[in-house]
Image 1: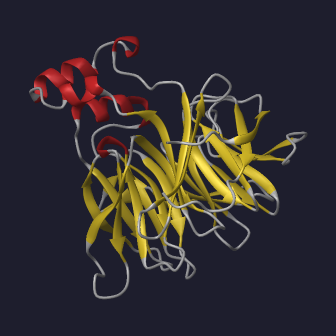
Image 2: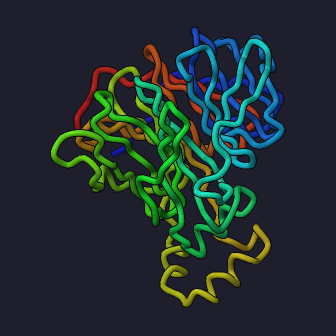
Image 3: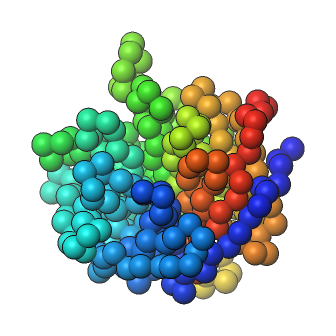
Length: 313
């Protein structure tokens, strides 16, 4: 059974949709709906604007050279200078085709970036349609330090969160529409092969590798029986449902849930709480005994005590 997260505090930002979070030099950095990159004091007492991507920032990481790596759903893969506010486009097209939905990333020790393009069909404004239609057109991409970009996995069901195993033996990618996290092996005899890391009780969004060595996975909402029924319907029927007003489509339930899994995909922590205070958790980061949360829908970030000691399940 899931455990309840302890010590949950909600830190208001005065801005909507801090979809992902990363901790840099003791402060929390996030991107919000209006395009701004914000830096938040850990007590929530001060919120500074670092830059404006003029798009919709989602996944956010540290590049290790003082800059931030931002997956902007509208503009592509960006490098942001937090001191001067400069924004550089690192990748906005692959093989001559513009990305529609850059989503999340992980940075390897040598500077290689692994990142997701959620769909070849729908952008962020129609993410529900991609789930309903089940386009399975998402991709996991790799950008080498020299700027070359290649596809290392495709046919993914709304490719989303990306994380590297602690020893960088594989890169993991969440498939929101498949209720799972897959991994692509980077070294050893399985290099280049893909397999299942873990199946999930709901829709995953962003994932990240914590300083505890676990891969932390957000579970935005439980599995949806109506969606399973729709996936058995003809393609035309699914497309018609996807064009209904949003309030008539299957929607996320109000929960706050994350899981931490080990390198083999065994669930070490399963934390779930009611979503009245904070819900639709899309970003999670384990850092120095705390779990930091972001949400696509909230106007705040949240923080809780990281579970300790590690309990195997």
